[in-house]
Length: 298
Image 1 (tube, rainbow, N blue to C red):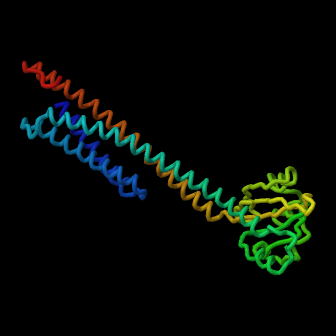
Image 2: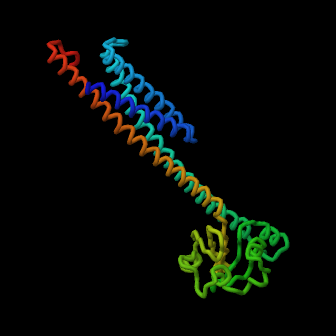
């Protein structure tokens, strides 16, 4: 009687597992992960049917299928089930690493794009005031200004002036940290301070509430015809869209982690089921022995 109750409990657990797995399968949007979960649904359904057949056989004493064959198939597909769980875990980790790499490439691409625009727009700084060059300067949609070695803004493009809702002449002559950050000293980790020290280009992400949007800042050094450092080109790229994608990726990673936890629970459940099958076989052998019959299982 005890082993019948055990099988009924097992059937109940598998039924709830099937409902749960199906619900997860239905909510997954990542194609290759969903394929693996489809196989998982089929395996859980197989175990559920096997338990029902086993229950009917021991309850009615009618062997619909050889119990040895049934148990061997349960063990076989149980092994496949374990392999599937680890495969799902591996695929999930690959998706997470892939998402992180996409984010890193997006940030790197933004930085390279900013540097390219600076080089393209200011290849000939001596002609900055030329009409055609000024047109190119103002056509760039990123926020750009030129500053001297004392943080004083000496030139701005149209996009920068428009974003601040100020006229260029209202900005020129002021310190960059006064205009952007409303401070009396440079912003902490200001990339231009690094450019001042080593005369090299530097990149820094800045998220100041006074500006209103996250920015990827690039400061590129400017030298006069004698090679003397005279200032830098300050280019700011809006990271709002990238940050939104980053948040989406983080949400997706969180979903993948949740799926991993589900897989761990399924693995633990399967191991418990396998252990119970062995215990039930031992119990059946014990009952047969007491009844004076030959053991059925090794």
